[in-house]
Image (cartoon, rainbow, N blue to C red; front, side):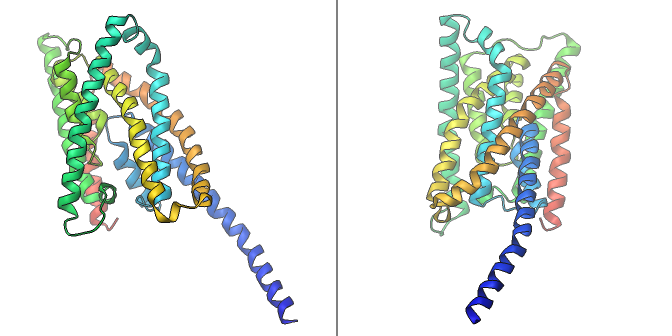
Length: 315
């Protein structure tokens, strides 16, 4: 009799729990969709998608450093990478694949820029891990990515860089000094170096910093935009692989069930990030062509103040 009552109790408790689990699942899927839209819009605009996603996660009560959310973020980046490839494909095909000489030139520029990015980025990551986590055991740069007190100054720094590039552009327009030329190897290397500086810092927008650097170095803004996103396509797979390996090494994601439960919302996020990324790219190109690049700098400065305020409020 006791066994029957106990089985009945557990069955009743399980039935009562099922609706709650369904609500939690639906809420999580809704949160992933929101994050995907935030990531898709912000990743391809020069305003730091990482900063926006981290803030959105904190406001929704999620843990940005959890392995499940890290997997979601990796898949969101993959979705925006596909958006970049689709959006720029015709332009790249005409510009970069027109003939063997042109392709060889741009391939060398991309390889050199990416190599410089890797050297500078990896050196900075190791330096930060050894100084910020001195005396600790195994430390990873990702542990700092959810700290709003670090994101705010990074946003402010890239905001200043974008603002300077935008104002220089407007000055050139007024004085009829020309708006930049094509891209050479030195300029490509400089863009790659700045991209390397962006890697360890959430909030220091990769696209904002690289496009602004290209504009300040004398590259035509549309060419700087195209090259910046070409670098993003090359850079994304290694970053994705790095994060997957990191997840694989996490003890609580060693089971296939945990990984599978995170895969479905991650794939959903990939699709929505892809769609939002296409919208953001059209907007970005319009703003570049309209000479309003400096406004993104103002936005980053305002966003930095908001993030600092959220940190002060306890987020």
